[in-house]
Image (cartoon, rainbow, N blue to C red; front, side, top):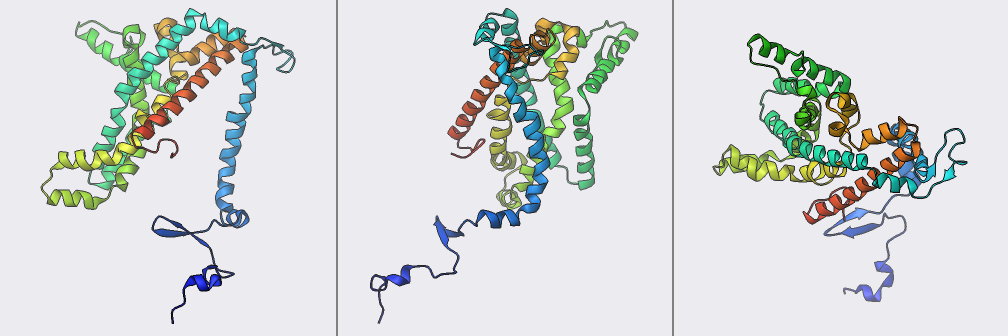
Length: 335
């Protein structure tokens, strides 16, 4: 005779020694292991991450203590603890400084130009490389386009100077044919295009790594099934490839990382070329903090400008992440 569980309360209890399970949807997952067990299991992985964690703490988190100087009249001779308190005086002077707002305007404009012109190039390069059938040829092309990432900005700008500068190869060719000259490196009207082309040449190849990994994760059965149904190359790209890349595009470029770093367009690149085109064109928030803060020994003023940029960038990242959730993507974290 069948006996219901209601008449045998012990039957519903798990037996001692069995691993408990928790239902998730239609399946079941094992209960979380004790932290000591997980520590022994992942000891090697944890040791591998220790150097990166130490570097992060030393160079990213420890310097946050210096943000207090933005609210002081900081004097390096007496240190942070003994410098006089300024409150928000540094920020009041900052917001009344027309040079600051000029740097802010340059930062937003140059960031917008780079977003529009730089954004599609890594995706297009990834799509083109993904169509190369021969693996050796594909690996060679990847190595070539990756290489400029490891060049310093000094070397990158020097190469551009030798190519399109006043005494560069292009102007020498134009002089030989009596066409005239055009020094791109010192023209403030084309400065936005110049720095974008430099960034594309240097970083576009490195930026395709994530997209190539995403393309490799797309199921080939989808392409075979669509080809069997008569879909051409462009229809397969539109209906399979681009939807497969959408999540990464939203995360890496459009919504989160590019928008969150909109105020960090670069430092070395602009610092090197600032004198060539003038401060009114090349000054961004990073160079403003350097020239009008550190270079003039006005450390509190530079710290106030840097703190303002960091707070606005944080708000933009959070807003971009919220926008990513609206589009149905995970963003930086899941809801």
